[in-house]
Length: 111
Image (tube, rainbow, N blue to C red; front, side, top):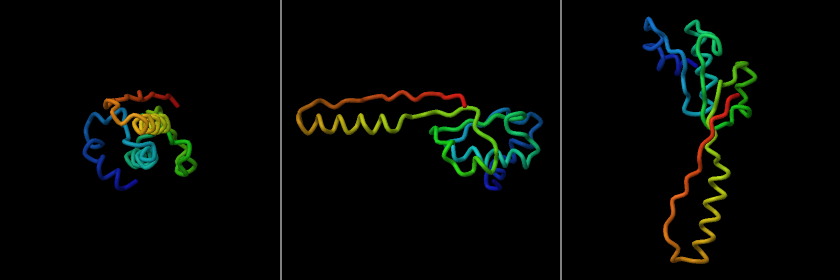
């Protein structure tokens, strides 16, 4: 929490404090929320925090902070893995198969 507070201090001392923060991963949402509280901001009221990875439900910090991210982005890691294995198996059967780029669209999920 204090690590994130240290990174946020310049922004929190401005006349116009941020209205939202996007964390690089869902697990960072919880210490960021607690850091906001150190600055007198109530997450979900004074500032919104969103995550990334769609795994916030599994974080043990959820029970401690009582705050869940406003939204998260799901990269669909399992679908990406399944797609890679499928392509690898196809390439094993046909080594001359042309190279491919497959895009797995992320999904924004409102929590």
